[in-house]
Amino acid sequence: MRPQSWDVAIVGAGAAGLATAIFSRRFNPARSVVVLDGARAPGAKILVSGGSRCNVTNASVTERDFWGGPSPIVRRVLRAFTVGDTVGFFREIGVALHEETGGKLFPDTNRARDVLDALLRETRRAGAVVAAGTRVTDVAPAPGGDFRVVTGDGDLTAERVVLATGGRALPKSGSDGAGYDLARRAGHTIVETTPALVPLVLAPSDTVHDAVPGVAHDVELALRVDGVVAIRLSGALLWTHFGVSGPVVLNASRHLLRAQLEGRTVALVANVYPGRDFEAVDTEWQRAAQTAPKSSVQTLLAAQVPASVAAAFLRQLDIDGGGALAHFARGDRRRLVGALVEWPLPVIGSRGYTYAEATAGGVRLTEIDARTMASRVCRGLSLVGEILDVDGRIGGYNFQWAWSSGFVAGRALAHARAAEAITPRDGTLARD
Image 1 (cartoon, one colour):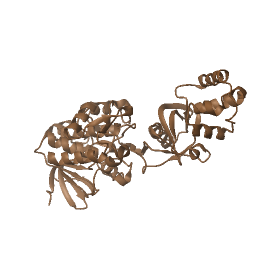
Image 2 (image 1 turned 180 degrees about the vertical axis):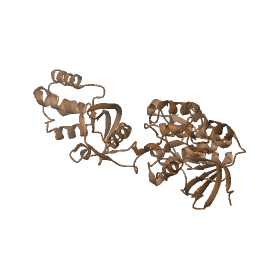
Image 3 (image 1 turned 120 degrees about the vertical axis):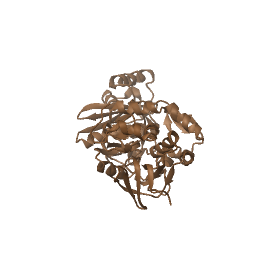
Image 4 (image 1 turned 60 degrees about the vertical axis):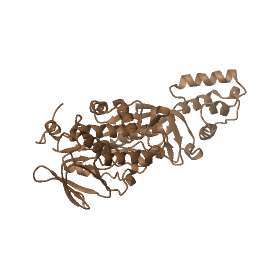
């Protein structure tokens, strides 16, 4: 039987929870730490991330790579445990990393399993206990100032509790949103959530995705909110049988879904000539007609996008791609160019949390002390990782948030009195 009284109880054995446990024990081996997780095999989200290779972090991470809560809070947490610290930490526990396109850092073995195994091994080596298959159903104040933690295997008490339950993305991994209820009962405000880093579903009126599933190419996406461009993003778009995916779509998804949540009118368009406007592209087509008049419309377009996509575009626009550029009517040319720089993507929904890589929304970030990750509204409670209203773009950023927030919380929990002095006991909001 494991002890029923602990110094620190961490709810959730994902990236942020394990990091918190490791650093809590490293900074103070005298503190007893238990990590409670409802899954019998913790870390499922780590295992499926990065195509089962686990994109541990990115070579360059700043607060500008994240959305949600105030940037100054995110910056302070990230600076406490940097990318360099992360690389050194993983090297220390036996996981060397290498850099790939876009600054993504993966384990040299290209195995997410090696990342998870190293984290679990280090958690146990540090002296924390991982209690798998132990689902927490409630966390409530207990007599004497401790917490009563209710689980399916019975109650336990803890001086400090950390919520590291994740958000709602990939619910099969255990991130089912239950942590939000625990945080809400503790007095926290929950910013309404939406999927983030999620593929988007297109209306049947768009026939391109049906014609070229699995084909990818670079685009610039523009998201219009109430008729005004709210954000432009560039990267690879992947056509799928249901709509669109790929890095640029995943990054855009949270902005589109947040705007829809607010009841605003949204429109998403793709420019297959990233960074260039109508006049510049039209001039290029006119010049091509002069220098290579016998080339076909399809040939010129296929120099910019995959041939199958070029053919699909031309079919949807009902333009003869086999005709020579010298005979390409001005009206058709301008209609084609206009579509290529603003190809409408009629989004009717997303693939939902089941296919999302992150969650937008969560516990309001201003209710957290960035110096300790301690709650400003509930004494003795800390929150780390995806449960908070912070979501990063694709490329290892959300994992870096997990490592950084786990480090900050673990360091503070190791010295409970210091953390206690920062976070008020009376429920009032402390100020930086």
